[in-house]
Length: 165
Image 1 (spheres, rainbow, N blue to C red):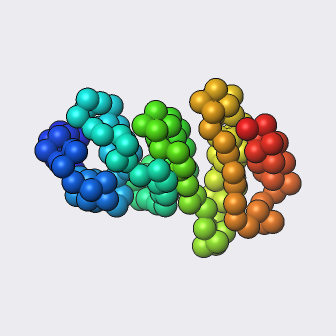
Image 2 (cartoon, rainbow, N blue to C red):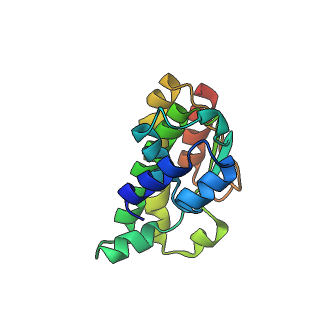
């Protein structure tokens, strides 16, 4: 759905429906980034108190995004990191108190060693690269899941940033 169409739909339903209906009607289940971005367009028409307090996102489609543009999968994952940065900032600005990102499933370990290595590198770079900004924005990082298969370097980075924030 194009941004203008989302804007019109959002404008038409803001403050008239339940928060759940607003999210599902205007954005569907997979378009949170667009939804949060549009909120900046209509700050006076949205009752932010009706937004959910906790939003969970399953990060999916980065490889598909890259493939559709004839790019390597790693380019899609890099673009996904950029999108996460924007989503975290926008969610914070919108007053969403908790944001859960499901970023790496056990099935991802079956990808090529190169792709898994690239994902771990991007994770480590993103966590260290955005730590200062997260701290300024008062965003707390909590990583959950099965970290045992990750490299010592990635685990150390995660631990250090979690303690810092």
